[in-house]
Length: 214
Image (cartoon, rainbow, N blue to C red):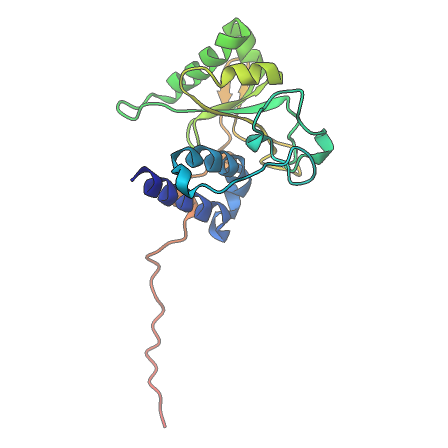
């Protein structure tokens, strides 16, 4: 049952990720696609698993699939596929209860406290967080070392800690709402919802009432 559910969930994510109707948030979804593959593989029975070897060098390397992620065996920056990936900017994705669902302020406060748990103070955490998201996904961007990024993975509520990449490549922007001096500066252009991305399934059909003659 878990395997079937995992396949359905993964199939849905990948379909959305590579569907042309979701191109507006393709960069954002690419951040999570490989992490989801790794996450869902834990639910696949050993009898149906295929042996995989992940590259640790070359153009096909992804830090998300590194079997021993640390700052000593990563590839040179010039081999990284995603623009903006520098192992200094990190995307931290967190999960929250749905009942009751926390407010945006409560989620942002949780982001600060989570980062403070590894940096030592909330003041320092607020300086290091450069973006937050409470709509498209729930998480934040932090300018920290790889050592701290690994420590973050063990904190309660943290789903993934991924090397961040530009959501707006031409402007070298990591996306999300800005977080400056402890305040959130909303940026609607980086807030995507499934309703915005999905094509309308109930578009009225144009009827051709002209009858053929002849």
